[in-house]
Image 1 (tube, rainbow, N blue to C red):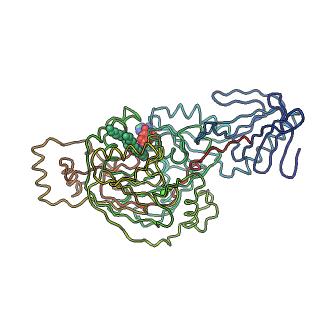
Image 2 (cartoon, rainbow, N blue to C red):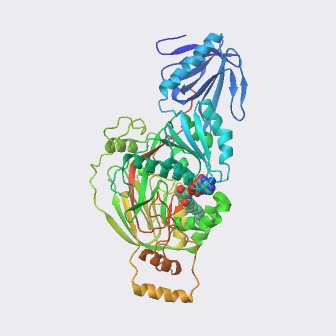
Image 3 (cartoon, rainbow, N blue to C red):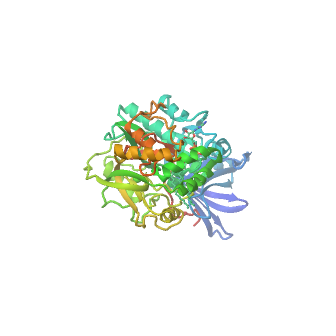
Length: 560
Ligand SMILES: CCCCCCCCCCCCC/C=C/[C@@H](O)[C@H](COP(=O)(O)O)NC(=O)CCCCCCCCCCCCCCC
Ligand SMILES: Nc1ncnc2c1ncn2[C@@H]1O[C@H](COP(=O)(O)OP(=O)(O)O)[C@@H](O)[C@H]1O
Ligand SMILES: [Ca+2]
């Protein structure tokens, strides 16, 4: 029956009678008892309906089709009964009284999907890294993701990468007309390729210079989807709340939208890289450098390398300057969490982009960031650190379910700077261990955390006498490690070359490899080693947008 508000009729599911109702925003079906009284109702927002097909259809784990006359099948997002952020593909098969009624139902539902899913992608560019994580990228895509995309009517152009940086280069150079978004099947490294390709392409087209940290960069018009198939999968975990290819595919299909802050990393007036999850020096840099030697181990390489590096018990001298964010807006120790619909992020959107009406979408309209923020005062700290880390978001992952900075925000235009001063080995172990539980890793006397807009990092100057003294010590010692020496130069990100830079900095670094007092570490930038130590980092608010919605606090059940 058609009504002012929608469409409804009696339908049958497994010979039981139901009343199905489609209103403006919801599709619901209620089981009726013999006396026509309502029993259980299942309510699904139209925005979470994945597809509607005539007949009886199943797509997962295998496709089967039965072309019956009076039936139609509806697929929808079904939140897992075990709670959390895990989504499943719900499926319900209805039988109508007539074929005409069945046709009306499919037509009405499909029209509703078009009306309530303006951000649903129609055409996607998909990059699969066949070597990421446990090397299951291809299989995950074809068995889980492709059937869901097909059901939702999404056409996808799939590229299985043959080399590192292929996806980045494609996005920088090739024609992207017609694509609504780009998807990677892989880990954080693969996501980083899309990030660099899309940011670079967008700035090129806008005529903006990426090298200048003061430039307000243009947000990317294409959304990024991540199908997790890597080792850490931190960006996926922190924006979706779970590492599950089907959940991520469903977020992509319904066109969810989650803006993300991005940090640009500069050295000597040139852009070096962008980072979203972990820009870490000291422990995190050493773990990455060590883990590169054990790539064959897969995801386990980080745990083995973490233990080895922990046992080396190193600390590093550094000077860190930071530009604090407004402490009245939020704090990294306020015990809040950035969840779906986060108020801190929404308020930041209103403050940073006052002319923008729809905070959920970057792609629907290009808008510019206001730079009314006064710069504020830089703060300087200097000393020896176990590690220095900057993250634009919580960076939660399976290893650390609340993340590096549990109260960090995905889209507030700030990052959290974590300074772990030199301490005894057990103290540092306590700090690391607290990442695995709900205990506060910042509640330790040798740990500081600051919410910041920018960070400058430099190595304290080492005097000639000090170097000489340490080289003399070296001749007697046998402590040289060569693992860090093959870092390529990253003068310009877009024209990457692999020459070594012969600078004072490198001499200090070479000296640092040998001697404990002046030892230098390396920067881990989202899983990539940087060739430079002295860097300037600036957080750019909401530079990219993911097909995600942030972590849902509690599972919102469909049943009422
Ligand atoms: C004692 C247990 C200690 C657990 C410490 C957990 C700290 C976890 C912080 C995780 C932050 C993750 C940020 C994400 C970074 C990724 O972008 C990036 C690239 O990922 P991809 O390879 O998937 O592309 N991943 C990484 O750089 C990996 C970082 C690994 C962090 C350190 C892990 C340490 C684990 C073990 C320490 C053991 C000490 C034991 C002493 C006896
Ligand atoms: N075909 C390929 N061969 C080799 N390396 C690749 C290929 N495709 C992508 N890469 C690179 O592999 C790195 C790791 O990939 P990623 O998918 O993040 O897996 P993991 O999480 O296991 O590190 C990325 O930095 C990416 O540039
Ligand atoms: Ca942030």
